[in-house]
Length: 159
Image (cartoon, rainbow, N blue to C red; front, side, top):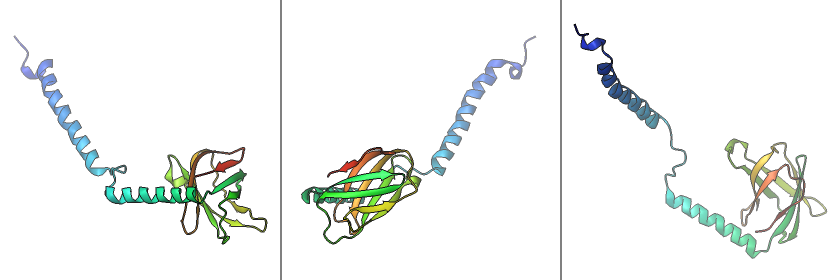
């Protein structure tokens, strides 16, 4: 006598394939609904305008022929302008953006001393690849450079 159908392998195999497919599609649908697409920009027009504004600031730094050297030694930051030095002596913002972890980003406000050097200090100097941005408080111009910390030598900034 033959075994009943529910004691055989092939009917259960044929039932399992669509059942597993349905379960996995439910899991993937739940994952798609509950997670946020952080890389998708909602307003492309505003992003494009922001990119153009950023490029305009870099062109302004190039027009002013701004160049400077930055020295970083155990958190102490010294910046010396070679050309395009701000005349009013206002503070300069030096921002560090980590390439992969936004939570590590930080900015340092550099103020000018009597010798004309801009100095500041930060305890957030973490080794790795960084995007460094130099700009005045009024954000008229901007210079960006990719660096690696710790920096053993002077970093030259030119637009």
